[in-house]
Length: 167
Image (cartoon, rainbow, N blue to C red; front, side, top):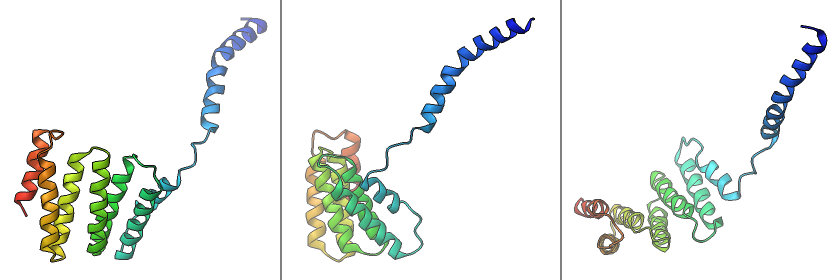
């Protein structure tokens, strides 16, 4: 093969390869948008925890993330229920219960009856741990009412009723 033909073949090969390579380079150099304030707080909350104060910090970060989100964002419920769990792990049962109820209300606003029922049952369990039987009965009553919702599947209804039965 002559040098001219070799050069032409190389140009042809390069012409077919270079555009994808150039596009690939552009894709690699584009950076992802910076995380939002709630996402940064959620990342902080997800960091490893070694002591109760770490769980409290995580709970506070998730509470703040929920407040920063727009109304109707499903992440609000996730953040609130995560905060309630973190407070509970840290032994802070009063704020855990308050946030669990806030999570239940937020879930109901989104039409998520099942998550709301589970959150009310979490609040009921926390109330019992706080020796607040009246509070527990109130949250169980909320969950019972939600268990009758036509929005729930039969399995979801049974799951909520089973939790009530274990109380």
